[in-house]
Length: 249
Length: 123
Image 1: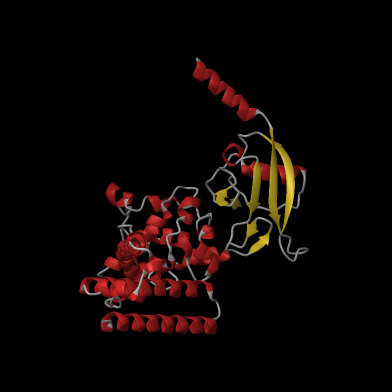
Image 2: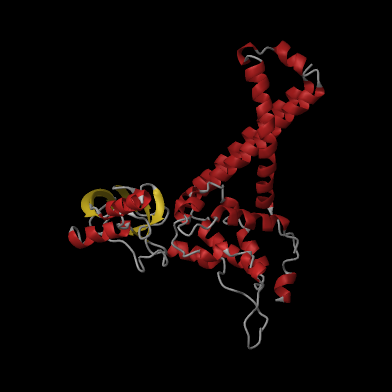
């Protein structure tokens, strides 16, 4: 009985509106020389998301605030941003998770276009450089390429990537070195390197073995912390390093 | 496909592969070497009281000379390689990078030679 009451009380608390203080790093390329901070106060429920907070600002206070979002449910990966110093998706973090005092910045390491919108092209160029598609010259015939559950499990973790960029843009080496392909590209290389149906393992390992590849990783673990899908990014990178080290092909 | 594969007959590991592997192994060894070194120099003995006599007594045992030489060479190589990677990451201009790396390698080589000569010739 008591726990039910406590549960009901907690639910009530989630419905009570609270004041949320937002500090957002703004940049308008037409007006500003450098980014500046702006503050907003909005009333929200603790069960609202950070994305809702941004929407509330945009729709009721300042329509010029720019940010990306599509599905708003943690699947499309559009709204990666730095919330209180950590890269997260605005749409899956509730006010009750992150608090009522929020500092929101664009992700680092990519050029800012406007406010929270960054140019993702360098990121996608790095993604394309690892050939993120199945390469297999054998004709499977009029059927699918079959794979055992064990072989599928080998790379299951890295299939979860939604290309939000939270990992790469949390990496200190990625910030400093624009030659580094970054954690996200390595995760997507891992997804095919360990796929038993793929035939371009050697080519991918060679790309990973270049100076711009896995050897730039200093195992800071920022990427693993940042990944909204819980991918063990650093572990995937280490697996690729070991695959190169042990490679005898 | 067969042609693509035959062009990959050369060694798959390169300098960066082995540099990484070296960092892993040397880091592990250095951890224990440094612990022992810290204990001897800072806990068992007072570092402010370290004299030539103390070193002479210790280096009568060749194993301690080997220990110190390993600490010297692995420390220099491990730290030097770490700095090389940091320079690659943070220094954008090619000329500055070359200059800094040349300085790094020269200083590391000089320290290695000086230390090695001292350890080998000390009586």
